[in-house]
Each structure stands twice: as structure tokens, then as C-alpha cells.
Length: 407
Ligand code: AMP
Ligand code: ZN
Image (cartoon, rainbow, N blue to C red; front, side, top):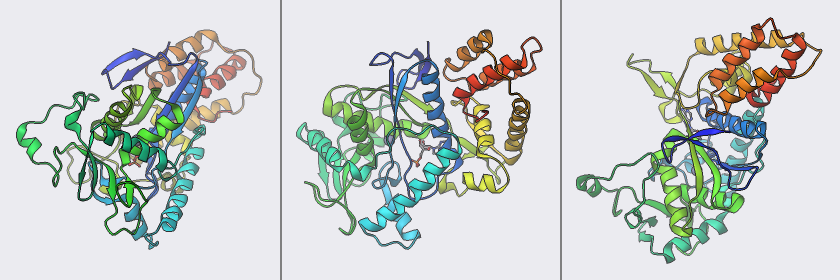
């Protein structure tokens, strides 16, 4: 029995699939305007771990990781520039659809290379937002027909005030009247968000019933997940930063349009943070905007293997923040090398030790407790009662979930 912490209920719940034996999952993917940093990559190591855990327990898994190639503004709350436009300017690419494609191709490839390096099993679908315009526009039309949308000078907005259930995820508190009045521009509420954004200069955009522009970031995920996984599907994931805005907005649109939940389980991984150099007061989220981001490539250039970083992540539960430092990575890397040195010389293989497997499974099926699962692994390594042949079989079995490439 797999138990998962569902952000929707705030509780640990037994996983019950919609269709027996199947788990259908949507993971919010990267905005491909720059390289992913190792914080972003934690989201996909986590998604992979979830997939492998389901597979270990006999489920057939379908995974979607979207590629956001337009519509994600610098602030998640729909202000600032489009991140892709920012990328085009940075790289001196033309502000055209061709330029957009070139930028997206470059960073989508870099992202997929990172996934391979981290031994992440390939998701079946990587939909691009601009390839699902038909579905995105259809969804917005439905919302408009049902009275959930209103027009402003720069686009069409979702009226969160029309939806009683808005903000369930993470328990958003209702806004006080004074908060509600300091809305952005002319929005009815600061929490209202863009469904279709009109292009500022008509240079870059797509045709729609509301004018040339592009879909809002949230509508993209609502439309692509429904198109590829149907609605409702089983599990939706992302980093904790997506809880208040992006995921509440996805839920609002999808439920308002189709009167059925979007997903049954909402799971969120915590951040990778870095010690704040100047304050001593704690840590900062790793983010492009903080200027403190480290790529997988930078890590490799310092001689670390991507799988050592994977091991580093597995040492913590996905719902605990981890502070990245080179020293901490070094320690993880040493432990990982020790494990490889142990497995390396073993070649004869026998049966899996069922008692250890049961312990491992119990940890991993308890909301993916990889920290405790690794403790079981090390106890096995040191156990003199288990033969090397059984150890090898059992470790390789564990590795189906851990994905450390021990084979
Ligand atoms: P983005 O490309 O900004 O949409 O982010 C891709 C994924 O990375 C999302 O699931 C974010 O929630 C997640 N994310 C962003 N920053 C971090 C961080 N420092 N640690 C862990 N996950 C993060
Ligand atoms: Zn999303």
C-alpha cells in the first residue's frame, strides 16, 4: 500500500488509482528560456522516484512533463515580462515565432540531457504549450461561456471571485478588504489571473478570438494535462512554490470549466536552498532571479557525477528543504562512491532477501522516505548474515527505485 502526503487534504493518504493498476501523472515542467538549475532538477528526480515507486509496486505509469515555451511571466502572479521574451533578448534572437522555437529547442534539449544524466526514466510525453493552442483556446472559450472570464486592456482574466472553492490547495486565507483593493491594475481581485495575454506590440503571438497574444501559463497546464491524461487524473506534482498560485489557478480553471476535479493527489517537493552569504540568518531558495543558481554542468565541471547529486537528494525526504553546499555534496559523493566500491566486485547473484525487501518497501511506500530507505540499504551492506550473492540481488532490486545506476 502506497501512502502519499496530499497537499489537497494536508494529510498522508492511501493511494487509490482511478483505474486499477494504473497511475497517471502530470509534472509541471520547465520554462525553456535558460538552463535548469539543480533546484529545478530536484522536482524531476522526485517525479522519477514517484514513478519508480509505483512501478516497483506493480503499477503501469504514464507521465507528462510539459515544456513551457510561452506565457510564463517573470512573476508567477502575472506581472513582468514573458520569460521566453527575456530569453530571446538575452540571446539576441529575433522576437519572432522562429526565434522562440530556436530558444525552446536549445533549452529543451539541455533539460532532457540533464534528465538522462540523472538517470531519470523518460516520461512518455513532453508536450509544448504552443502545440496545444487549440485545446487552450477551447478551454478559455468554455470559461468565457460559463461567465468566469472578463476582459481588460491587456487580456482576458479569470474571475476568482466567481468560484467559491478558490484557493483550497495549501489553504489560502481569504483576503481582507484592504488586501483585495490593492489589486493589480484593474483586476477585480489581485488573485485573478490571465487566461489570454495580448501581445504588447503584436510582434510575438498567436491568433485567438481575443486578439493576437498567448495563453496564460496556468491554462497551458490545465489544457495539456486534460488532453493527455484525461480529467481527473491521479497525481499532479511540482515544487512548493507552485502551491499558492499556479496550482490553485490550474484547479480553479479546470474545475470551473468541466465540473470535475483536475487531479486526486497533489504532491509538492521542497526547495533546494543555498546558505545566504551576507546574512548568516539562513538560506535562500536557489533561483535564477536570486543569481545563485548552479547547473548540473557546473557540478560536473567540479568533478562530481550527476548521480552523486541524485544520491545527495535521496538522503533527504522530498518534503524537507535541503541546503546545498559543496561540502555536503562531497560527503554524499563519498558515500555513493563507497556504495559503488562495495557493489563493483560482486558478480555472482542469487535471490533477493525478502526480509530486507519488505523493510525497504515499507519505507519507500511511506511517502517515499528515501532517507530511511538508504538506511535500510546500508544495514544490508553491513549485515554479515546475508551472503554477497543475496546482497547483490537485493541491492539491484532496491536500485529499481533509487535509480543510482548500480548495475
Ligand atoms: P520553472 O522552470 O521555474 O517553472 O520551475 C521548474 C520546477 O522547479 C517547478 O516544479 C518549480 O516548483 C521547481 N523549483 C524551482 N526552484 C526550485 C528550488 N530552488 N528547489 C526545488 N525546486 C524548485
Ligand atoms: Zn503547471
